[in-house]
Length: 467
Image (cartoon, rainbow, N blue to C red; front, side):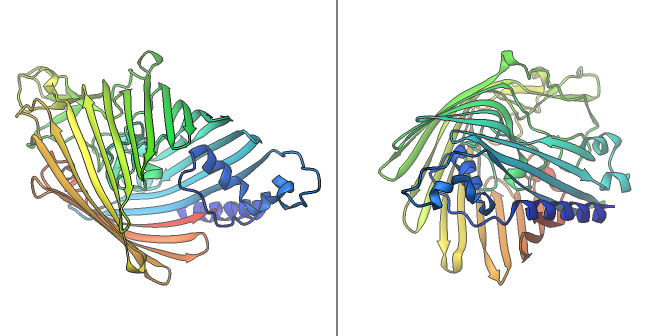
């Protein structure tokens, strides 16, 4: 059935490509705004060259009027994964298809519509997972980015469902505080798949080397964490004990508890520096203990309000690019082992920061090195983590031969023997087609960021067609 669906989608996608023509390669300035990126991508599709007839016409001829237009694009991806830890089982057989349409209403008004459909057949052909896990992840329709862009002088306004990315470190998230995330496979999918768009009103102001970003999110999107019993459900106790969960409480998603923030950035002497403040309903859930002391353990995932302030810095050093991010978080609560703690939680304000160096080595090999740390302020010894939680990562990526590309990512805790290793090999065997094989391997204690997935080691393969 899956192969039939993939063949059908491939035929349908090829029909769209034939109708819209071939897309030429793009050269996009790195300083372009998100609205400009969409405009550039549409304007440079070869079948839309006649949009701006005055570009190719003799300059002595009168200019032609603007035409409305749109452009289809998307991908279909078949994914298979097998958990190799005991008990071994197939964990994914998913067909993921995304379709988007970009267009102009006028030279200053752009729009985008997009959606994604995921069907995972593993939940039809296997009874390994509980009914609630199968129901949660079997078939889903996602609204992706759906927005309207309006440009007026130095201002760009985007209204609708959109990605808002404030950080860009490798492997993990730090200053990217606005994005909600689909964490049902932890941070393993590509970030463009993992991020969940927010319904927002976003206003950007750009003048010379200064940029301001104002964001209002009336109804927040929250992280998707799945259901208890899934391979990457995020809650683990430090010791084995019977535990139950109530349905996640998402009642805080209302306009009276809307998210808002501001980000200011400036390019100074080659240093790209930004600072931000963001108030939000925490996209990451906190697990409240709701049982009485004499009752079996019972938890519920809830979302409280937090405040975050931080910044980013980027500098081209010649042989390497330096990147840094830091975030101070006020109001987040953490689980403790102390049975007398109210709700089993204690508030711990935190300071997170990360520093990275990106090198381009001979033969176009990319090497990325990162150091990151979380500091728990006013530290409570009963939480599951150390006061100073430190770690590092190494990413090595490059072309191997012909159409093959290799990648290796290692993230390691510096506090304990806890790590994640992700080797991957990609083969671009035909135009718009690529195939990948890889593994995701975890090690560490059950309450660690990575170690809690120690029994979720897996191998996987992906087949993707882009159009």
